[in-house]
Image (cartoon, rainbow, N blue to C red):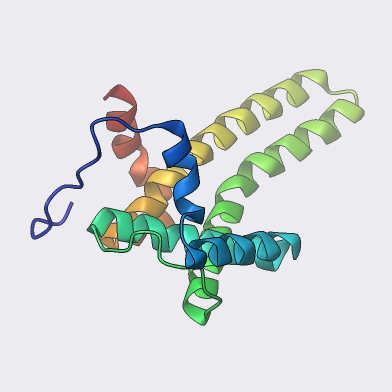
Length: 165
């Protein structure tokens, strides 16, 4: 958390209805949800835009900026952020996917031991990616730490500390 911002204060009690209804509490919020839903219907471009918007929201939340959930708008900045997130996710999951495909090929070639080893490796790589990507994207978006793009394995100590907490 940046030192010049006070920590976020949450209400003493939070009811489910308020937690789920705040995005559509205003006219602008309903418009943003509708735009986001429309974007998701467009498949890949929509998902990229929503990833960019989520990064923007996470950054605003981290910094304590208001409004935290700014209205969803189509913009080059959100598109660029979304492409960055999509690229990191794709690159992070691809070694595990490649190991799984290699295991599938080994299984169909009759080399069961190699297939099992490849699938175990794939599972470990995919699990590591699932744990490292959110930590890395948070650090990149909020703190400007580009480690997730250059050496994501260096994020493992951060992830381990948070898992123990």
